[in-house]
Length: 157
Image (cartoon, rainbow, N blue to C red):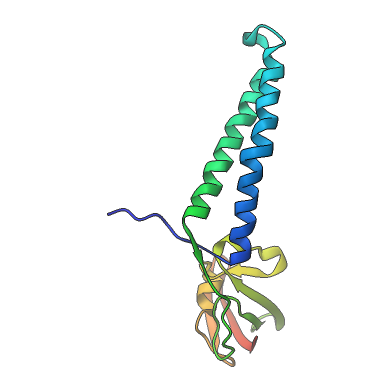
């Protein structure tokens, strides 16, 4: 039997998605419908670029609505881990790159909240998976396109 994938996220992220869905289904859908109505009033639809653009925008909107509905319907709420003896979702982990000697702090989050640019990494990413359930002082390796990367966990918050 086929099961829908579950999307791990916090309560806050689920609320953001629900709010965005309401906006898209109410305000934005009406705006696009109005664009189509206006474009139709310009006459011949065969050479009406405004109509084509409005219909394309409507297609994108419906696709985005379907995507967000899927995320909301298949959301799996994860609570931030309060334990600091091992890494879990919600942990802030300071690691040292053993080859570069650089320390960096990452927050482990569900896949829907990951943003590597601000050091929020998914528990499903190779690096996130490598960190999960590890303890302070533990060293580990991650296989990456650049080769094997070696890290040591300095702190778990």
